Length: 222
Image (cartoon, rainbow, N blue to C red):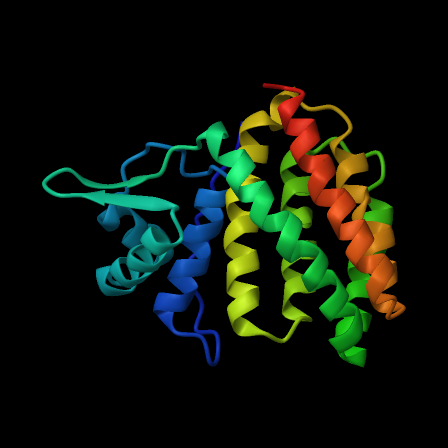
């Protein structure tokens, strides 16, 4: 059973309350801490996050564009459903963009980026054999987002994050029935190594294998 974290927003320098609220709500929706179809209570979220309703409303507008929430006149705002029929569409986009991102990250990552990716790879190595699916899924998100950051293309990064979020929601639905999740997440180890080493071609190939493997694993459970 998932436990929702009620950590309040901080006064993080350079990041507005609306941005912090967006990130917090986005990850709750992605990890299904806010369940599909669940109504969004602005007052409760405002209390939990320790901010006014304005940042919450601004965040919800963005989350609507992300297809994570939907607003209905006179009914309110709800977390969107997870529709397995979307898997083919999401995977089609990811098969095209994930190899491109991995290749670009291998070419463009700074020394600081490569150090960060090395730390993530060490964490992955330490998680081998782990059975906490929730922690593994969050690590998977961290790895993907760290790679996307290294692309240094904000438009591509936003697109990649958006589709990875939608794919992760599908994964969360099927996670209780999946075996070998640690192995799937662990596939990122060689991918991170390729990016750290600047091997763009290998990084692209591994990224494509990972995305294809994800779709195959989900379809095996349908």
